[in-house]
Every structure is written in C-alpha cells, then in structure tokens.
Length: 223
Image (tube, rainbow, N blue to C red; front, top):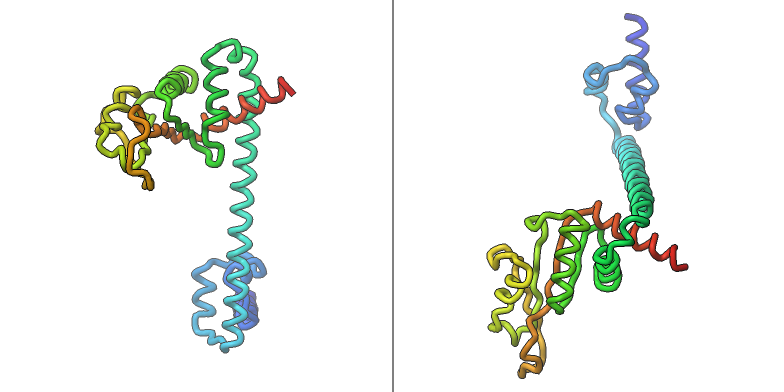
C-alpha cells in the first residue's frame, strides 16, 4: 500500500510537469490506465502546464506517426525491390514471346509510370487491341478487371465513339467509364475517322511493379 501511495504521488508530480499518460506509465511499472486515470483525474493544471502537456502530446503523436510512415515506406520499398528482382528473373523465358516484348515496349512508350496502377492510352484501335490481349495473356488480368474510359473533343460528341470503342474492346457500353469531353476552339471536324482516345485502367499494383521490373531488366540488357 505504501508503495502505491508513493507511485500515486510520483504520478501526480509527473502530471504537473506536463507528462502524458504514456510517459508516466513508462516511469511507474505495472500501472494500468484506469488506475492512473483515477489518481490524476482531480489534478488541475495551470494554463502553462496544460500548454506544456499539449506540446508533449503533439510531439509524441507526431513521432509515432512518423515512425509508422517510415515503417510503411520501408515495407513498400522492400516489396518493390522483391517484385522487381522477380520480374527480372522471368525475363529469359518471357523475352522469347513476341507479344510480351511488344506489350512491354508499347507500355514503356505510352503507359503511365507516375502511379502504382496500370494506365494505357491511345487513339489507335490496333494498339488498344494488342494491349488488351497483352493484359489478358501476359498480365493474367480478367476482362472484368479492365476498365475503359473515352476522351474525345467536344465537337465529336455525337460520333458514337462509345459504341466504336465498345466494339474494339469487347466491353459493353454500359461498363465503360464516364466519357470525358475535351473543349476545343475548333468548330470544324478535321478528321472524320477520329474516335477519341481510349484509356485502359487496371488497379493492379503487382502488375505495375512487374512491368517496371521488366522494363528495367530489358534496359540493363541493352545498356
């Protein structure tokens, strides 16, 4: 009992110095949150003491978040390194497949590299067909996981572009993303064959990282 009284007095003194619950419990062993709360619930802090406490809590919270963010970042970088290495090891077999080489090359030229997701855009139906096949056969992505969005100039709004790309991709119009109409100062349609730009979206971090690994591996072969 005497020891607990000393612990209580110490807890109160630490609280008055602006210590947080966590800091007090590190200095007093075997102290539960409920017991500590009961000990210091009547402790009244001056505005200065309250300010010190809030600063310490803020600093502790910031440090905890920083550690969590650093841990997540290191884990992510480790996963990227592992996936990249595995992708490079696959190259000797995959590079003999013309479809593989063509798809990686096309994505290297026209695909998005800024986010960890697959995005490939082009206005050439032939290239869109090739990439759809590549994603299915090489990337092992089922058709239902592929999302298509159309981007067209406003003056081509009534050219049935959605139906055109639906036929090219084999994806029903009802499953196409909302079409984006781009403003243009032109009032005359210069290209009657223009059907806009088709963008394929695939939310696969794994495939994106493998793609980057394959590209890096190929680059190392030729450099």
